[in-house]
Image (cartoon, rainbow, N blue to C red; front, top):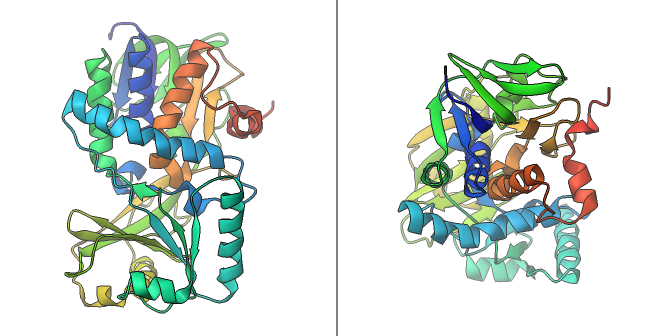
Length: 371
């Protein structure tokens, strides 16, 4: 039987690792139950974009949270490298969102205006400016340019977060959590191959979060498949990140990462010919030179998506000791570090980094099931 821990984190991906790190650094005894790299984990398949300005819209309740998540990596990346020796590959040289149709021009221009009115760096580049800056691009009608956006490498991020958590006293066990242990209206632990006792449990198991037996009510998270591919980075082209309505291109370590699909395919983390065709169509319309590159590898991941597209972060109110940090969809990497901080603050009863009550309400675990 495993020893008692104050907090058990179910899930050792980006969200779980970030929660474990913050909780351990806050002085909690923490156990991470990590099933290891199986098939379809979102963080192993993610592109790692940090692009809240690119993906936001004017009614987005979590725009400020996304900005806070992106900006947190500016200080976290050097800190993790200093304490763990791991470089998470943070790249913050801007992202362009391309208007490939006339209909998208006004939409992107209005987004530029909205963000500039709030004091954020964001510009509109006319079609001739785009052609001058990126002469290898396909035809465009202009582009939104967000110079503070960027990306990181999700795999070393998770490795660094777990290593830093362990340096602060957290333990990691490789097991598959199958059931929550309850005594009355209180969570007292988690069952896998062993029984792990604790005062509190944080469920951060991505698309598998709702698979645990013993949940007080369903967790509204379903898998949405995203397929990706990698080709060699074209010679004579400077690294960049480009985004369109249909896909994106990310430069990383001599490759072009091409993505991505959004498919309701259950837990089937398979690559399909149709999915790859849509990815390559979007990528080559952005950068025609990619059509000549040989495919190096393809893969797919399962994003945890909620009915309203917003994460579930906070205390499950129907039982004591149960916390949720899941449902981040396309933004798991962007929001991982800030989610870990929020969970640690909420569990300590401290005021949270995010003071916007509407944003915190949007994350509320009780919003789907009030019974």
